[in-house]
Image 1: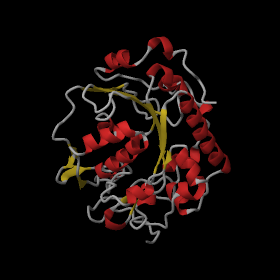
Image 2: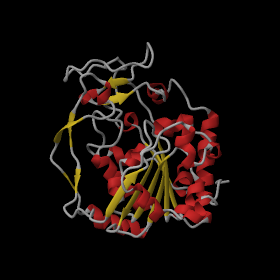
Image 3: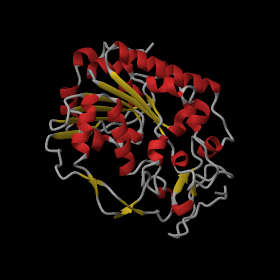
Length: 341
């Protein structure tokens, strides 16, 4: 592939996406009309092409955070895994309109055996082997990618969840392509770029006992909390997630496996939340393009203070208060651990 600026979606007549600078477009169009994030706050093209390398301090902090998280969970008997979600350019290098390489494998992977023992997953090979893993117009995984990743996580989290996955996955199918989907990259064009996509269908819905609600933080990602409770889940386990939108998009699958889920949109391990949730499993993770901005977990604020500190309004969805009262142990919420070290 060449590195030519191909921001116009010629098959749709869309105009180019806005740019972050005079030189680097925000979005590029690659082979088969796949759209790729190139600029933006995380300098995707620069990092994944090798023009920029991760700071050694960020690499050291990434591994220090991982080891501290593993130790924290091991000491409390909590199953732990961390995912680095492979970027679109790392999974689909043949479609990418510039010479792309994996940021994680180049700058952050130090010892694969050690990383595996620490519960770190970078499932680039699993995703490359899965057809239809990405939407053309979005930075996130399509349904086949989310299914493949959920299955991999279950096999790493013990026999009960492996059995639960086999019970659940046998019931899901993909619909025929449906028109009109527009992802986060397609929305950057005018007119918007749309595509056909498939969604998961579950013949036995398993949602009769499901309640899910968000704290409704406005105009922000950090500080968002989603609470889920499903009386018909395949296990009675509780899952606590610290991560980004890749995990949030997996919630419709994960709610079929875990009785209770607390999703906290955070780049940090929020140790102060653990005792009040009493999870059986903790998952942490980040998009690969966020690696270069890794910070120490101890640099965080209390998770519940994040919206206030940023001046963000919050309007909880209906049912959030009832889920909060059901899930959280009020007596331990303010007295739980504050550090992974």
